[in-house]
Each structure stands twice: as C-alpha cells, then as structure tokens.
Length: 317
Image: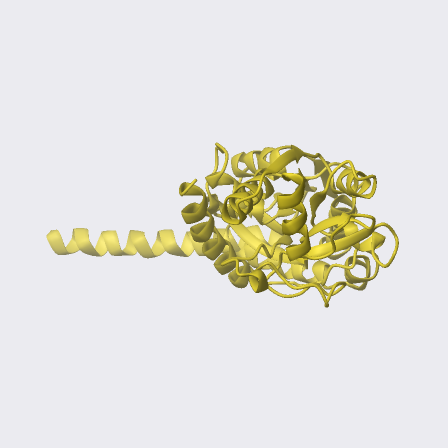
C-alpha cells in the first residue's frame, strides 16, 4: 500500500511539472496578447522620456502590441518603482528609470521596495555624470574649486536627488569646506542656474554636454569610473582620491517572478530595441550618452554590487 502511495505521489509530481511546463510554453506563445505598459520614472518631454518612448516604439514593432508609456515621475524614480513592484509579474508592465532608483534610494529614503524585488532586464545608455559650473566661474578644476570654497567660505551646490545630496555631505566633510545644497528638480534647471551663477556648481547626469565648448558650461570633475567621452581631459572623482565612482545607467526592470518563457521573449525584444538604430542614434548622437546595453545577468550583478556599496556607505551617515 505504501509503495502504491509513493508511486501515485511520484506520478502526480511529474504530471504537475509537465502541466507547468506546458502552461509556461503556452504563456510564451500567447504573450503578448494585449498592450504592454511602460512606466517611466521621469516627467514627459525630457531626454530620458524621449529615449523611453523610442524604446516603446521599437518594442511595439517587434512584439506586435501597443506599448503605452505612462510617466510616473517623483522621488528619483521611487513613485514608478513602487507601482512597478505592485504590478503583476506577467510581462505586461515594465519600468524605465536609472539604476539608482533600485540600488541606492532604498538605503537613503524610506521605500516600499528593496533591490531584490525586481527582475532587471537591460540597460540602454550609460549616463555621463559630472560636477559642472558656469563658464564664467572663477575656477575650472577640482583643486581650484576647493581653493575657491575655502577662500569664499563655501559653495552652493545644485542637487538632483538624495544620492547627490549625500555625495555633497561626504565631499564637504572630507574636504573640510561648507557646501550649501540646493535641491533642483531637473538637469536643465541646474544648467540654467550655474550659467547664471545662481549656483556655484551642480550635478549633471548629461544635460551639460550640449553646453560645452564655450556654450556656457564647463566640467569640473567626472563622476563615472572612467573619463567622460565628451570631456576626456577632465579627471574623474576617483583620480582625485575618492574611493568610489557614480557610474549609472538608464535601464529597464520588471516585477520579480515573470515566467521564464515570457521573460526570455521580453529580454530578446528589449535587447533588439536597445540596440536599434533609432535608439542608438538618439543616445549617442543627440544625448551624447554611450549606447551601453548590459545583459540581464550583467545588470543584475551591477545592481547587487552597487546595492552593497550604497548600503554600507549610507548606513555610515
């Protein structure tokens, strides 16, 4: 009798597994059978939004279903990520933001999500993070900026997010200078403010690149791990003795747990869209962002590494 029960259990287990495999295969064959929503963690009209919309258009052509862009700006991507985490893990809701939404903000502000709540799909571009000043600023290098701050009693710094604010706090403490942080809601406003000398310096994720070469802005220091492609003569923050850099990406993510067959189909479509001519041209020719497309595995490892660094760094505050 016991043997019969064990045999029956084994048959049931195999049958269940077979049913799940068939179900997953059927899901992949049917997916997508309705519109896909692309939640964008930025306001409409900017470069990031334009990039997301080009991705949506490329995905539509490949998948044969509408990809509806839904802008959910706020909190450096927190609003979008919170909605994304709550969405069904069925491949019909994906999100577009920068990696800091997932690997930094949960350790700086209170969020309803953690880094391991998502499937990370691919990057589209590498941001060109820099500390910038107006062309008429009386300093042009990191050391000259520090000397100016000590002579004048401090600096005003335009911050885009809690992450850049935290950087300013650590920078001020390390260098023994006063840095007054001014929260700014957009990269273009920072450019306007440094050009008008309303701010001494500001953080730019790449908007500044259209204002280089005597057009109103100069780069004081690059914040990525390598020198910026549009400012190759400007040293990085690492070259100035800081132990970490701030390389970041525009990227796509989804709720954790998308069925594997659907996920593979989605990944293939996203990679094709991210490397398409239209997306690459916008990124590299107009935005001046390298069209760096990390795979899901590479991006997941990057997020994990950054999360550990940020957790350690911001817990020390």
